[in-house]
Length: 101
Image 1 (cartoon, one colour):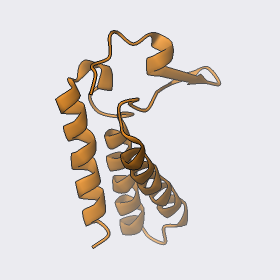
Image 2 (spheres, rainbow, N blue to C red):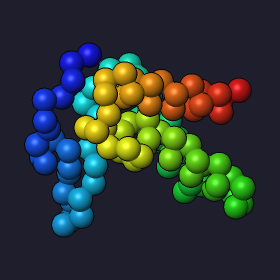
Image 3 (cartoon, rainbow, N blue to C red):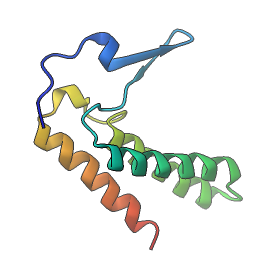
């Protein structure tokens, strides 16, 4: 995986209604990206539909793991090496997939 040269602010951030959001790490491969987004969607749905505090907490944990895996939370992806980035999304997917068991 090639290291990013020096991403521009437009490559790092998305601005919506004046609020700045970190963009997804562009190095996450397609299959892994799809899996992380699926977990994120299920987590968000779980937060909306949680019947109690424990369910809401579990759903928020899923959202957090997915966002970290995508590079949208935690150490900024542009400050990580290629190996660190790969480790980040692989670890997140491993933990997220274990939630399915």
